[in-house]
Image (cartoon, rainbow, N blue to C red; front, side):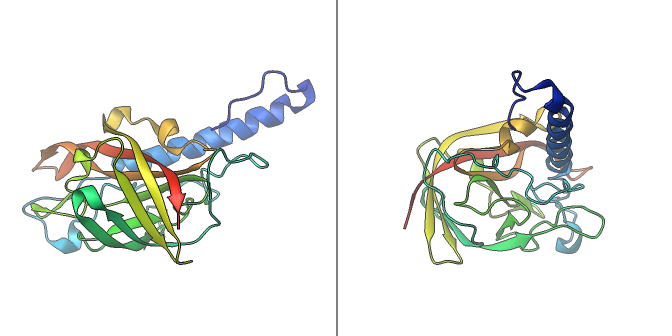
Length: 230
């Protein structure tokens, strides 16, 4: 999110405050999604009701592309036009997954991947390779068995992620860092703020699993930046 410019003319201050408040509200709403996610993978569940992945699962922010760059802002690195992602490949994990498209349910909640072996891209956000923070999420476990992002927390800075897109281009991202956050301390603005480059966030569950609540108490987030495209 862009900070308020303190030197802005007085006549625009109210409008600036309203715009900033709107962006903050959208970001905080989206945070609620992520904090609410990850529950529901337990030994006693059936796949049909295991429905919460590591992805956000609450009311989605208004306006669709919640993290669009500031109009006119020049990107600081390579960016691509918007094109839907088709597959994610992470060589260090031996992972290759086609991608489900995650939209919103009728009640405003975010869809989660139906197949625990597949990751999903959150469609209202940027596409991987376009300017902004694209989000790809996946389950960590499913009915006690490993799911697509089970080893995500083992990634390290310098690892690469490749995302193949519908336009036949492959965007390569380099991991900057991997972090785990208790849900109550999730850094919403850091994850979803506007970017002047093509970013990627991979999200899954982490921390301890409560078998009675079918709930993980943390989120694992991989922060990456596009470093090439072919």
